[in-house]
Length: 138
Image 1 (cartoon, one colour):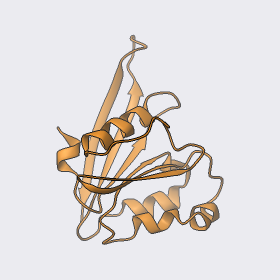
Image 2: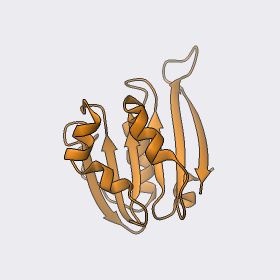
Image 3: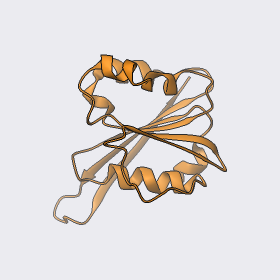
């Protein structure tokens, strides 16, 4: 599956997996496949969100790892990226740290799909990864 070709405006990609499995690397490759040139800054762990514009429109890469509460999500304005009709493709890491927020943003809605991407270390090969992709639409 070519996930970049499947993504439409408003879609969100929720990345999950253990620390160091390659969520940020996957996100950066996906953003590049969407036609976005990125500076070499890497993961938005410290900035929390990076916004880009490219051939596919606006893309936001969010890393929830440093956030400590759902109040911080609201205070940082992150919830707005997930509002319907924004046309922004959102790629988010670590949303499972906030189950209520994750439930709210992953519920199928009109005009967008939620893509669940799970990365895992492959058994027996430290350099290999297992990848699972599933989607839900409204």
